[in-house]
Image 1 (cartoon, one colour):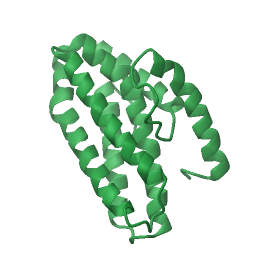
Image 2 (tube, rainbow, N blue to C red):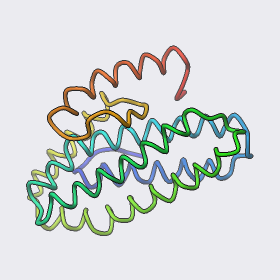
Image 3 (cartoon, rainbow, N blue to C red):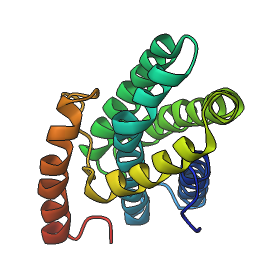
Length: 185
């Protein structure tokens, strides 16, 4: 899928890619190595997406939207739950008894998050934020995803300025680990 455009187009493209990975997972035999590979791909995509949202989207939500503080805090809590599930999944093998149960929980959390963003948050952003700001946010999100971590770090800060300082270093460490281990290929 093509990336580009404003923040809403960028994040919506990410959502479709994540949904496609979940669909591929469902069509893969239980216990197979391909399931673990798909969980790795999902983890990489979801973590990069979440980090970028935490660095740029949610600060903009706080600044530009009515009740933005409350909304951003709710979204951050959802990210934390997803990151904990991803962390649990990373520690398990595809034939582990809890693997599929955790995947069901993950898909439920992620589907609810996507639905809320696309049906509420994005409409509010489109209405309450100038188009040029949405375009700038889209570019910032794309850049943030390039340097973001690729693995869950549930103990790491999720709000600026600390997250903007830590994410590039964690991202570098994760990408080196991925390169050496072959994870995400």
